[in-house]
Structure formats: C-alpha cells, structure tokens
Amino acid sequence: MDVSSGGPWAGTGLDPLGGRVLEYLVGHPAADTRAVAAAVGASDEETDRVLRTLEDELLVIRIAGRPPRWKAGPPRSSLGFLLARKRSELAQTELYMEQLDEIYRAVSRPHDPHLVEVLEHGEEVSARYAYLLKGSRHEVLHLAKPPYVTEPAEGSAHRDPAETAVHEGVRLRSVYDSEGFTDEVSLETAIRGTAGGGEFRLSSGLPVKLVLFDRTTALLPLHSDRPSAGSLVVHSPALIEAFAALFESIWERAVPMSLESRQDWPVPRRAHGTAVADERTREILHLMATGMKDDAIARVLGVSRRTVQKHVSEAGSALGARTRFQIALLAAERGWLDGGPASGERPRGPAGRS
Image 1: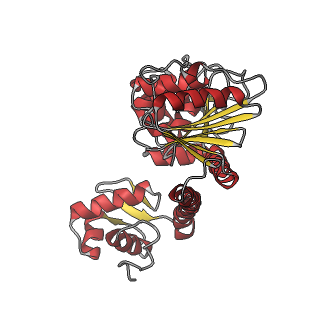
Image 2 (image 1 turned 135 degrees about the vertical axis):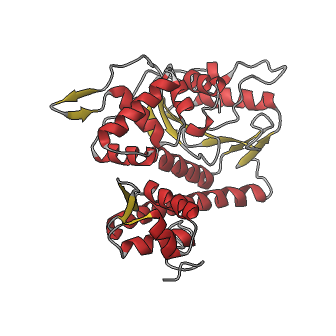
Image 3 (image 1 turned 90 degrees about the horizontal axis):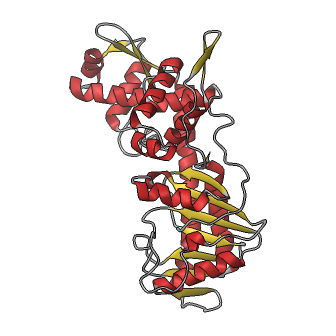
C-alpha cells in the first residue's frame, strides 16, 4: 500500500513507517521487533519506537515473552476508534474556524460603537466587567485560560471583579483550561471564581478567553497573551450567538469538577474480586482524561503528586492497562467515570476573573 503523503494513512496521523509496520502485522499472526524491522526495512530502534506508539493508540498488542512479540488488533475496531476520534477533533476544529472567522470579519470592519466597543485601559475593563456582572439577571458564561489577571489595574478605584457577587437566581457556568493549572495562582483563581457558587468544568485547549452576560454582551481581551492590555465589548447579536454556541460546545465536552471540597477520600476498595473505583480515583481519572499532568492534578485536588501516581498505578493494575490512554479508555468503558465529580447547582457567588 502507498503510505506516502495522500495515501491511506494520511488522515490517521500515522507516519509512513507506522503504516508499514501496521500493514505487516495485520498480515502476520505475531512477530518480534527484529522480524518487523527486517520486514519494513528500518532499524530495530526505529521499529521499537513505532511499535510503542502503535501500542499507545491501541492498534497493536504486546505479547509477553523473551523477546516480546507484537500482534495487530482487529483493524475494524482499533482503526475505527482512531478514525472516530480524528473525525470528532476535525469537526470541533471546523466549528472553531467558523466561529473565529465570524469574529475576525467583525473586528476587521470599522467598529460600530453600538455593536463593538474597544476598552484600552485596565481601569475601564475592570469597571465594565463589574457593571456587566452586577447587571446580569439570568446567566453568566465564562471561558478562562491563562494568563490570568490577578490584580486590579494600578490606580483603579473599582473593586476587583472577583469580589463582585452575581444576583439571586443568576446561573454562573465556568470552563477553565486544564493546561492553565501550572501554578498556585492559576488554581487559586479558579477557586476564588467558583467556591461561592456556580458550576465549574475543565477542558483542554480553550480557543479564547471570554465572558458572556445574559447572552446580550460579551467581553474578551484584545490580546490573548496580554489580558490586561484592553478588551472588546461585543453587542452584535450574530457574534453573541456564535460565542454562545462556542461556549455550549465546550461545556458539553468539558469535565465537571468541584473545588469546594478537596479532602482525602478512602483508598480504592474491592468487592467480590472486582475492582471498584472510589471517588478520588474517578476524579483523578476525569482530570487525567482532560490532558492534565500529575502535578496539576495534585494541585487541583489538594493532594500529593505521589498520591495521584498511586491511584493511577492502582487503576492501571486493576484494569490491566499499561498506558495513561489505555487507563482512561478502559475506565470509561467500565463505567468508572460515570457519575463523576459534577459540581451541580450551588449557591450564587463571585465570578472569577478571566
């Protein structure tokens, strides 16, 4: 088969050597690394690297022995799963493209003061945020990613928006970027923004920082890497609709979390010889599925990195999985992630700064 650019493997993410290795194993019951390397014309080191990558993607299976041998998984199910994931990622990217193109075309045209405003100073942004938050009567939707604004602008006479409470009955929903939990400041920002109320979820790769007020007004930074250097206030109904659709699509696939209580839970139990994932293990696996590293998971849950690694290791042993990807996949298949750490409805409280 042709595995060059444009060949049958182009849409899978596999490189040409990976395609040749998989093709060889599909046609042979089992083979060790040296036999596969000789068949595909590559070194043992290159072939071993490719085989481990294919194993992580659940496309091949390692058979214990000396030396270990490799066997291809059923292509319809193993490749089918990979392609389904790629299609989902592509669909999400296409949605982002359309929504971001709408934003681009709007901000590229001369600004209509009734549709888009530009706030160039931190004091203006802080004051407008507080005004819009206190004026909200139905819901506030929040996408938060680093860098965070942790201090009010110098000389500002306005209160920190993080200290401004929403009104009774206002639903507050926040999605934080899981890749943003790299230090204590990021974690404290999320805790401060959701501890008193609202619903909190985690997702990786958020495309934009954004706050939507009652689906009538949006606030987003002029520069994604400098959120304190000015913001856009958007009133355009078309843009608001696009922003709301973007938020809902991210919210739907985000992982529900609660930071109100991060105490230790019991260790995993076993009943009748069957592994049962406890609350802490499920929460760790939920966070791991978002792409968070062990250090970030430990900060979010208020436990040690060793505790996180212990639970991941025990989950892997109970599931018979060797990689983090396999652990997350098998945990989902067995229902360990069902009924996860959803925050649910909580009392109203402050909205965190984006």
